[in-house]
Image (tube, rainbow, N blue to C red):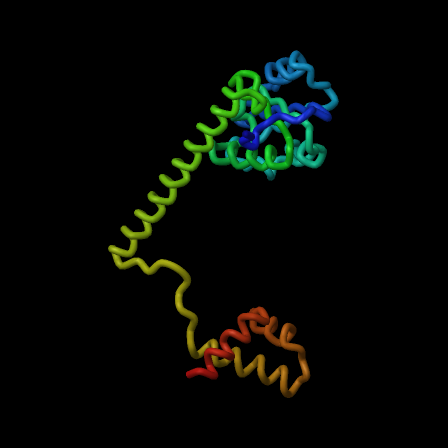
Length: 205
């Protein structure tokens, strides 16, 4: 029986380090650990960025991600070097594993090729899902509290008079000036879909 984390024969081995711009620490410790683990120097990618920056937006990570292929192995010093939060880490690791990339964390002992490593990744995924649910509950509680205070949630309703004027303008440009729908709608800041939506609503009134 497989669980999605069975390690394939490694094609290439890559490493990744991340340090913070806040403390300006060098990545010497991380890099040395990766080298000792057998990762070639030329295949170690690095970022020095704010911890709040999502994984996919980092230049070093993007360059690394472009090179990772099915069967490759990504080695990191600690699993938290991959993402800014548990959710970010798990989302990124899961996406890599689904592409056939093995992920190994030296200090954490996380290795998807071992039963213990897979257990740790599954536990992390469980905690990440729990964190997502907590965030959703907090957001919903905030929305409910705001509504209880009379705060209107969502976009304000469009001004009917302005909508009617815009419709007349767009229709005039289409019928009298010969403009296309897209170009005519753009003159009032609308998309083609917005124009048709308001025109349909007007026809049913």
